[in-house]
Image 1 (tube, rainbow, N blue to C red):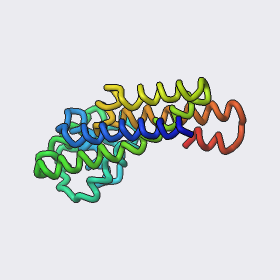
Image 2: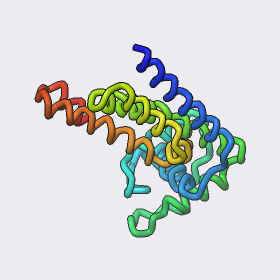
Image 3: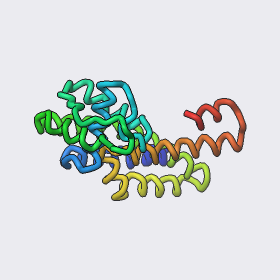
Length: 191
């Protein structure tokens, strides 16, 4: 019981640090393209920009764009995948809106990824605890929540940490399915 509370506290501390970093940092180069792809998605409901990444990141990043109602400029859009026009659409999106609105959209989009990162952290705690005991679960949670990679990439619009988190969830449920092949474990693995 106490180990779970300590694990949750560590995850919350890492999430708080992530949100703090997200509030204090400016938009990085890769986030420009993710913002452009998310703005394009909110305007057209298509996922053909930044097609090298799964659509979940565009959906999550698009939520603050929908609520903040910024100007979306798609003059640089090209339907040809080899043009990689998400970079130009993102630059146009940033140029078409005031800096305060871009910072707010970026912050909200970054914070929208934090629950997914918590989910991955919780399942990595469960997996390590089931495999090697509570002490290893806590060690892994400390490494997950306080590592520079977690803090750095978790505080961006890039879907890397969300993909890592959902990968851990899938590994956990797949392992459970291998132990007890039930439909519940199949759905946990697929979802």
